[in-house]
Length: 397
Ligand code: GLN
Image 1 (tube, rainbow, N blue to C red):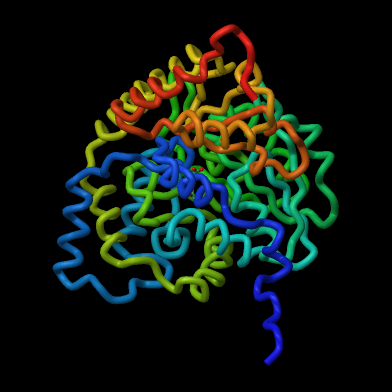
Image 2: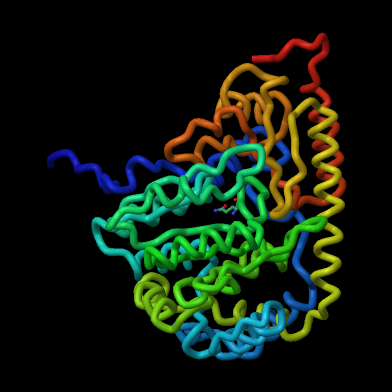
């Protein structure tokens, strides 16, 4: 009997374990408050949960239609019309996936050829470059620079080559909290149209925008609707991240390309949970979204104030449920060392953002905290962070 060869593919080997699993494991091991992985520590609306329970008890327990439960795709079509005046045919221009993360993977696998290039904006959600690699393509990175993380047309256009096939843009943006403006998206759309690029829009935080900032869907920008596959999900909006219900909306050929992969990845998504989300879209009144924004505005204020009082350099995010801030006045190491110190000695888990960068090392001086947490959790986090305040002005290391 000989040794067994290494099973992990060389494609996946460089990516290791996702930071979200790693930090949640450390949070549990150290009894730390988990402000790392972005999931609410409160439950979703009871009426949605009840609708899923009814579906489970009512026999909705076999495979759903692979492209999505008819009731859910109809509810989604109506939602895009009502919210943004965007028309997507329920049966041909909408698809349902097991979370937006599966939608991203299926869209990349369904649309990319080996050797293609894909432009990603960094910092990025960690699955993007992995999916590009799994699809046999190559990622190129356009760095969004602090403090504004603005779209820079010239820097973006300089990355485009004859091999560039696809670009992915996320707005509201994780982890920076940036909400791209209509003017930025107009400039982006003009370049994408001129170079005939396909676009994936990750809009999972679309309902989480603050103050005067509004979400502008990429599909509402001239030149983009015909080339954009919009992705979103129920997880963030309905505080049901464990349900893993995501969707795509876009031109029928792009929806079909993602579906071509999806049918062989998961085939279909959990039937009763699709019914639950359909019920949510059908029944929740518009006030739900107003309340959601008000509650998150309050959580954002609490965490931003806490971080500012502790000594972080903070700007309030325009959207999402994350704060990205600088810790240099409090600690002298890099972001990995700082998040290790936080989880082991302060009892707070956070994300070291260098994992969200491919080219730039901007992430080394930054840290990401999530505020999708109950007031008591954020209050306890504030108490723990007091220990981090520099006593005599010196930074720990
Ligand atoms: N999107 C969430 C975040 O950025 C986590 C997703 C995950 O855990 N895979 O925190």
